[in-house]
Length: 480
Image (cartoon, rainbow, N blue to C red):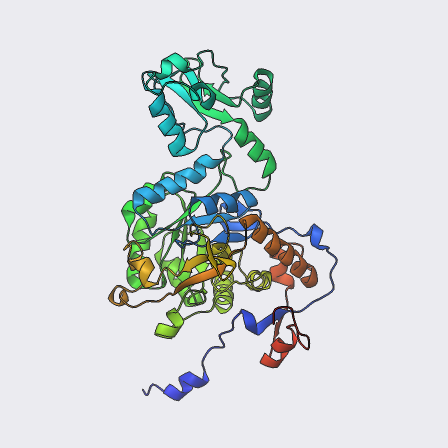
């Protein structure tokens, strides 16, 4: 049977992007202040805001993950580092906030003051419980060591009479104990005096300040981590600490990737996110092959640093891909959150992705310009910038930890670029900008929450002339 090549061209799918559409306004009975932006990152990880930071080495380290989680979203720690380094980054996020810190840094009474100071500096903490044989025998704070001889032993300078709390202490009880005794650290011990955890006034203040933070059942900030489906050792090491494992390959709809993911998911317990995929067919094949997954990362070739579509002419732009996968999920009667990944530049783009069926939007370029991203702040021509590089760029691949993100035979070909993005300030500023923009968009659509948006949003296809008219025109803007 002939291939009918011309028919393939005629029957080609309409592949739309964010710039092709608008949301049509409709009668609305909701005000922006009444709109609820809460959603789900995965089946069992709710978020107050639908924002996810991308696992790129110039975007999401522990600082960014902490900031995003405190504000109500979630960060995905990049994997362009050793397993040990990535585990430490995850642990740092989990330790950043907790009502009762379980993994407590301690010191022994026979250690020197100099050793204690080194531990405090290394982990950026202001005090250490002093433990001997598992039992709490004192506490050491920066005030205790401020003018002490660094060769002295801890036993000689520590505070020996320590106020403690039982394991079942409540937040309000802990606050009262700390206030009554004017202390900032409250060790938690069992009846035998064994140290079980530590409560700090800083963590209590943080809980009250960030009331919408993304936290686990123990009050710790939630965090996800990127993995390769071929790296079981990394996945198992992270699985002990992380809330979700995010499969980080450019083309998940590949037989080898699917088979590896099927094996890997049986060895881990964290929520599992597959991706990236770009079609309904890919979703269906993933459902048939992979035993379980609680989230799906959607979009191929739309990222600001991605040149996959230019190099290979293969792509599934995010808006198109999200709608395809959302329809496939409905057809299969499955409720798996979609993470729209790539090409989101503005609150309007985020709105379109959510309206097309996504539960959250993953952003790299947007967050790369924030204070909390790993890159150095650079001044160019009187303006400040931060670096951004795609994980398919040659410089990112030189570290060797992400070479399997792309096709093995083509790992010498760059599928990403690197450059700079304008400095945008703290992540909180960006999150507020996107939140306010989304709420305004929801108001125009008449939707009170994301699920309501899925039902009520109406799209308008805009011509190139129409898009020009929707921009500022017939006016000279400052700086032009």
